[in-house]
Length: 116
Length: 114
Image (cartoon, rainbow over all chains, first blue to last red; front, top):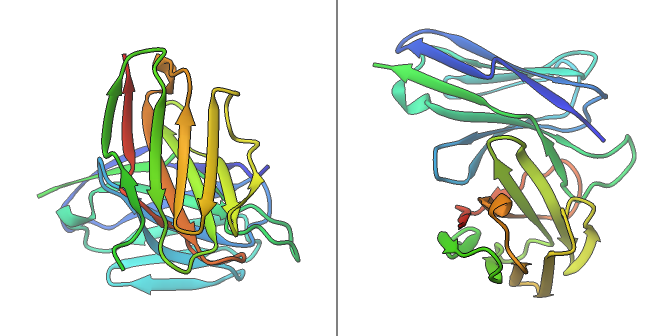
C-alpha cells in the first residue's frame, strides 16, 4: 500500500511568515489530496493534484505536485492565525487505470501553529 | 446540504460495553468511509462501502469491529466489546464514486473507553 511521509511534523511560525509543508510518497501519486483539520473537528478539503508539475492555489495557499509525481508541497504565504491547524496529505490508493472509489491513505499530518 | 452527520459527537463508555457510532452521508454520494484517528497511528481507513456494499474491510482491526450500511443514507460502526485501546476519534466520510474525487468528512465521534 501507499506510504506518505510528511515533514515537518510540527511547525511554529510568526504571523506574516511564509512556510512550506512537504509530502513524500513511496509510490507514484495518481491523486494527491491536501486537507486541513482544526482540533476536535473534521477534515476540510483544500486541493487535489493529479498531473506531474501541477500547481493549484486558493487564497494564500499553493499546492504543487512534482514532475515525477512522488512529492507534493503545500506553501502558505503571509501566514495568519486562521491558518493554524493540522495539515494532512492523502493519496488515492490506486494504480494507473484502476479504480479506488476514493479510498485514501494519509500522512501523519503537520501541526501548524501561527503566533500573532 | 448539511454535510456528513455523525452521532454522537462524544462517547464515554466502560470497557466491555458495546458502542455504536452512526453516520448519515451526503445525499447522492455513493461511497462511504470509516476512518479512525489516533496520535500514534494517525488517520487510518477502517472500511469503505460503495453503493452500500462493503468493498474493503482490511483496515478493520479485529472481529470486535463491524460496520453496516443498510441503505444509502445510513451507516453504523459497532465495537463489541470495547477496549481502552479503541479510544480514538472516528470519522465518517462520503464521496461520489470514482477516483480523483474528494471525500467530505463528518465532525467525528470522540470515543473514550475507560
